[in-house]
Length: 111
Length: 114
Image 1 (cartoon, rainbow over the protein chains, first blue to last red):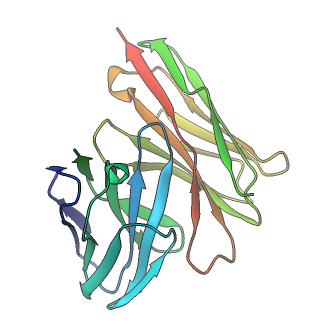
Image 2: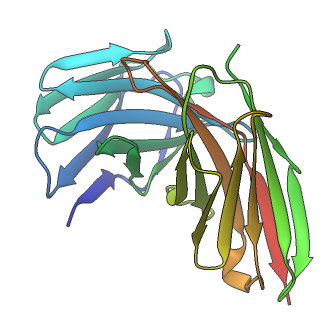
Image 3: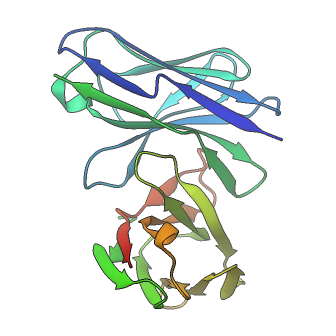
């Protein structure tokens, strides 16, 4: 069966510090991968998606970047965090025509 | 503009009671509508997915309905349990979107109390 991992589960970082969140998927190959952010009181916002190694599309201009160095690995990064980057970050992968599975999420607090 | 509106924002019900959550959308062209359950601090888990031709789908005590003409969906929870306490998110997919774009509602926070 397919499994999606995210780490760390929680993170507290000061403003201006770098960020690296990792997502890995098991049990499938060449998945479409997605990064979402969920801010308090708001719906999930798609940040990046990837259809293959090295292929990244950005949905929203922002302080973040994404990379896909391996087929089942998706990384979300920032060189300098802003307070507005705080939120709950979710990685997801697409299965079949309609289904999308989410990871457990990373709670990021920028102080 | 593609939007998904959910109501109510929050709901408190007694254990064992039924409840219905609403979702209205303006996403076009429509592909499918999903309901997710998200426990606090966890990733969303899919409950149901409905395409244009489906007007009802059940998953245990959860029953979703879809009226594609009025662009409305509802999620009915029967005989609620304490474990049903969570946020319920309505998500609509637009057809023909090469990036497989989904529009998410803000969710309804359900609290089931004993």
